[in-house]
Image (tube, rainbow, N blue to C red):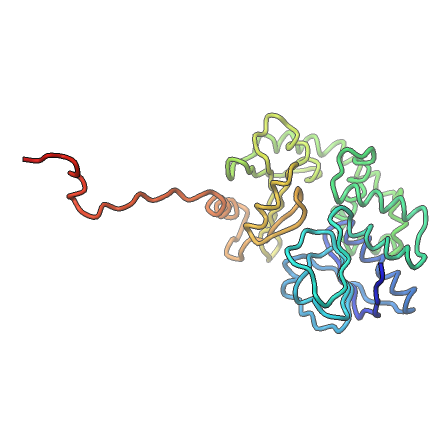
Length: 313
């Protein structure tokens, strides 16, 4: 691809997962090579990003949905989420079939940033982020993805000293594997007993212990679970309630969009209104919002309609 890359004032990425970490650090490395500049990296969640000013003249953004406020000539957006609109002024790299990390890596490869280690890591990131459950590396890839979710974006970034190759075969993977083998089966059995209907097609899965994604994935494959979409909910400290949706055949995204959320067809989420104060209120809110309202019967205009067609002496 032919891009006119300008030195960014900042690089902005998603703060929630391995894809955000790898794509963000790859763009930092690319900026260093092209401009010999140590460009600061910022990581944001979707809810916080809506409040962030977009005042920079130049910026690179990855693994975050396109926002019209980013549509500036000096901006580059690299993303893989479905988007209803494309930028008119910013440069845009977009492909829903690849992770944001892979899209950033392909851009890096054009500028001779590549290695067998990065090839391997981007494959694992792709499998995990796009949830390619048929891939032989699926279980291992989800363990890698869990590293960032378990230890946090900034903590894990510090542990690897910004060298994303250091993620490969990291010693902390042994802890993730043990938790998957021990905690997740316990948590799955507990959660299965507690699944609650939100709509006929949507079930809420409470989580006690274990890998949330693995538990929900297993329950989606369970014939005893009647729902096409499963959701989890999480209350942020002094923040909103976040809901996450998972499905197997694209049914999750339409639900997230009804709540002004977004993401991938089978893995997406939304932030609930600030008036929703806890998970219990969130479930009530979703039941009210997502279930069709019963149609009201037409009112009787007058008593004479009761006797239409009846011969009254």
